[in-house]
Length: 296
Image 1: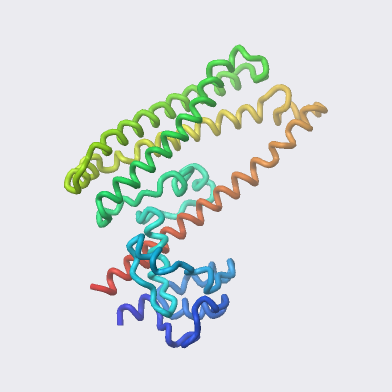
Image 2 (image 1 turned 90 degrees about the vertical axis):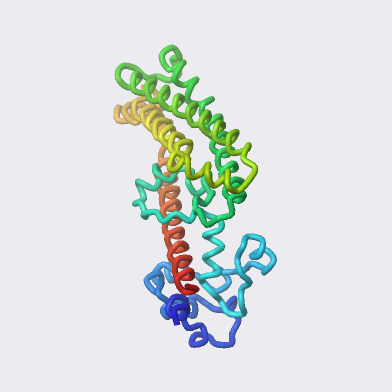
């Protein structure tokens, strides 16, 4: 009974039909019979059909530890794929502005699940992959932030002066330092966890470091904040093509500022995408919890 309440009465909706043929209306009708009926609006908005929900063969599902899917569509099984792919942490949904900053790189560079229920060697592998990604990004962006901090005062091409120049130099230097710390901590963590060879050592390592395993990704995030501020200062106060000269009707200044118009919609699109990723992770975790409760 618990399973029916959580995952719906599949026999009452499109009984005897292939779930892959369900259109959006059929999917929403089935969703209404589950405890997740509040998601119907989102499903309708994005025209989610049966073919969108699950199209994985049993061998691939078994390879990531998901039970064989039956003949009928089971949202619990479908969302377990998401749980296996993304972190199983239950996190709040940020607004679009917060999502751009707080989740920069989170779904892309931090896929490792921190769930203690996972196989220790799987957690180790995912953690090392996460650290390698952070190291790569930090190393690349150091080569951008550090030269900018060192040459901003002497290079006339930056066309900055006064307080704007000081702020630009300061935030570039802070960004370079934080990227360096992120790189160092990621490398040290990767070297240390790479030496662990049995499950008890790996579990002990994750318990001992606790939340400090988030240090590399948080440092990289703060570094991106600083670099974002530096580029914003440059876009506004650059004496040749910045927004401030544009107000003086400089001919080249107006033309030079046109590419910056792409930045705002691009940032908003990225923020909304990250926001949707957070919402999907919450839904995945809720369904995962419901399935565990149904088994018990």
